[in-house]
Image (cartoon, rainbow, N blue to C red):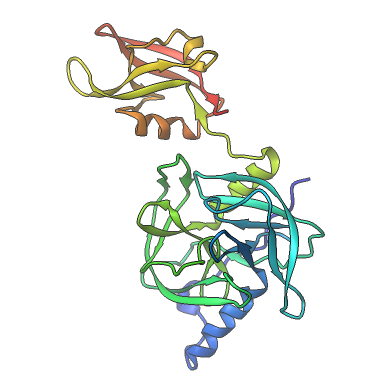
Length: 305
């Protein structure tokens, strides 16, 4: 059974944020609100963080997630209790791993949409790399549109804070000044950039992992490298074709140059991966050049094994 979604808040714009007559009290209250939902994730060196997403599911960074571990969960009295968990699945494309905690009874975090959030608004990164809760005040640096990740994932919105995350904060939440979760902090999804995976992306990925154990990624079954196309432009030269893959089934062969899929240009391996990412199971037209002659082949994109 797929758990119900965490309660999302249609937060008012920051213009109606809590009074700053005593900002330290506002800050502390925001962190205290999310603290019961922040869990400790043991790692080889030190600890990392995670977040109770529902009353039985925890999310954390897939980069450090292990198949077997015991999470440190805050009990009713605030003491940290080790809880056994089962890994449901992970998605490196969005740096998310999902665990089910035996016995449930977690405190899911309140979440919010990005409505009203803009560069310059204050936020906290919150973590529990040890037994105590930790917080790092920062400003929202960028709120941008959808972006693809190098690992083939899709972030529905791009959220970046203004400085590097401290060690152990990856996998923990980024919250607003009401203590509502904006996203999950990650240090490894895009090299050299500290991002927050937004709530809307988290929910989509969690739903897929709970239902199927993973997020389906499109698969063609070819190895390619970039090449100049005769007559101009760039394409992806097919250097290998996997037996039993979608490409070989429709007659794509070594030496073909793929130039577009579903009318989206393909100039090399990176573009090919991104074009395929969200199209598992889709039937598309593949434009290619074979022996200097342009051709179009229709195929159904597979799911990466």
